[in-house]
Image (cartoon, rainbow, N blue to C red):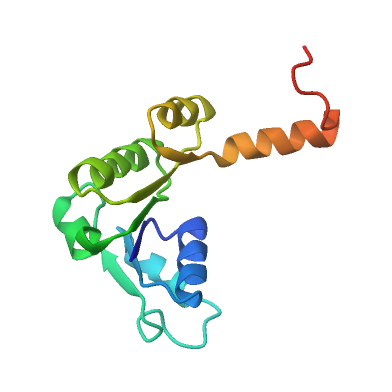
Length: 145
């Protein structure tokens, strides 16, 4: 089962893709209105398609457990806050022993440090920096000062 915390643009898009690919998917978000992103452009509702949605704060163990963290094979931390994402990713990994934990971190320096500590980090900011540098400077600019 895939548990995604954060039903913003990123979390909801990944959730819908995973559900369409046949995975069991649970989404946890503190905003009840974020559920609308899961239903948008879908033939059936999120729940009718087999998805689970839990309203709650990811920093609360009860909410994580209600969302199914104890059954999760994959945990994705995709809230809009780096601190929250980093804390809940470590909780998923260390307390609940989720086999695969992926955390979105916007700050490139923190993403690199946490990746060095063993967290599977994705940093959209770093990806954007690299793409813009390549667009402006060309792909061979690496290491040039």
